[in-house]
Image (cartoon, rainbow, N blue to C red; front, side, top):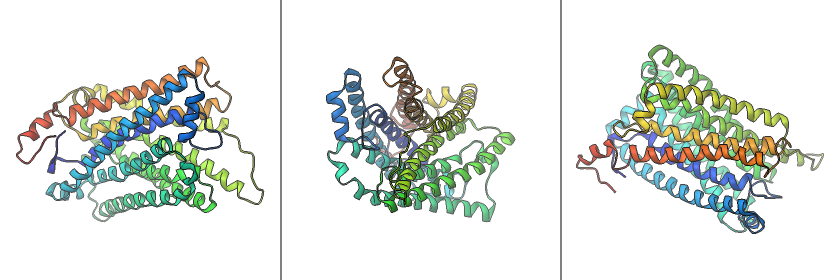
Length: 416
């Protein structure tokens, strides 16, 4: 893996770390939806071990695969995160960084809070799966989770505030230079902060912790929705007038993982609102685990994702993006790493749809033949995403890429 990219570095390389972190979270979904965890909103080390001890061959295989997958992809995630932070701080000392701050590409800085939000998610799910007796101190950790996501949220607000202030005061946004849906990465970043705040809402028992978490998740999720409307329109205007730049083709899929985060935010906040209802004057209430309305909501999100996926796939197949930027090693584009996140987003949301939307509404029996067939869909999607992630890393950042060969010729570059 190459180092010291200098002016050739792009904040979009954070998306490489982001994608592998998302894959780690997908493997946690096996614990979340397949293993039983009665009495707890999330699986814990104890519930997973109980499921392994009492489960059949399928259950044990799922648990083993979950732990192996989580471990591998979390290690890759934090390795790439460290690499990105080192390269980014070096990049900030170059003239290219100053140029970036004066162009449309300034929005790519939103990849930083986006990835840091995923890092917190990764730490959280790893702690739940690996640390015994964590539930005994879990509620005491909730305020720290709010502070962590709050810090990432402030970073996102500062980056976006600077970007919008420059655009509004100087009118320097280039529609011709946009040539894609690049700006939606900002939406993705705020959606990540929103879903992070929603985690304490789903798991907290303290009324004020839950209330603050719900408020925080709503605040950042609504910012994401508003920015999505603005940036989708501006992106479509750019494409219609100047065409889609081939290198920006992957941005056609940025809405897919963003929608997954919105859906999970709704699910988590729903649980938080139930907690607040229980704390009201009426006392604890009976709450359904799911509803047909919730299943319909998840269906709408999946249909929207399918629309963005289908359009993006048609475009990338026809303009040669797959051939040149994914399978080829001659053209370098950090934006290509955007392709990993949609696969993760679809896989994760399908797990929620199958288990929360179908199983908990009695529309599909758990561990039936139909259930295994349904699970094969997110499993195959995740497998393809894993292949895509490693392929992109090999062709974009490893010594096998043309980019690496070019960087080797620069005396300041050191290869590891």
